[in-house]
Length: 345
Image (cartoon, rainbow, N blue to C red; front, top):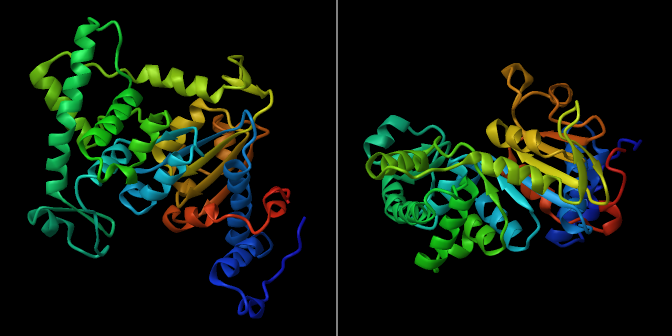
């Protein structure tokens, strides 16, 4: 166990800003309260991303509001550098990435009247503003993608169904083809380029779902099969591991690699990832409360009781907004020794 300690801020004056920030972050594990949890989470994330060993895997689950925010570019960098093995999100976490290649998202205020904004053709996501025109541009971009997938299904006489991850990869490919000037900032584009799967089992819950529905209403026959992706996610989670479906359900014994799950927010992305991937280490960043009475927001003890966390899984839960916590977790450690310290201390 570590002793509570304070940072001597007078020592920071002689340092440049980058070094001073690293020194502050390195002190977090010994400060206590949520600073300690953030410090422990940072050590895990540093180890998983920047000191990856053969057989290790890292999964990132995120909610759609984080793609609407500037974290979208952070996620894209992680995919570009092949630091993440699989992403899991909601429908909004898919469509908003593509939409940002087609139009601007603006910063407003939380207090703005959402109803009045909608009358003016603007949608509010917290303090972020998205013009309706962006969704019109997205529809014009997305419909040819659906048409192409539908044609492939017809040619195979529906022997091969399209999984949501395959549709998402097709979006990435279309961004490269039709919007080469803006696609380099896109998470979906880099996942497509680097063959990193993006899973979204509830695509009907969003604007993208409306478009799929209306396309299928007029054209008939387009089929998206989410079960294919469940199998794919479980197989990806079991890579380099020995898995079995005994009484505990998909329990796994590590052969040589570690599986780390980074969960930003709650809801479907968190539950879908942890339900299908048996993690060795989990980092939660969430403002969810156990009083929600929802498996997506409950505490670590309840997650273990619900079976989404193995008994021997190392878990750190940071209570905070991922839009400012996650970049701090990514800021590289001052030394590699700091990364490899016992995170359970």
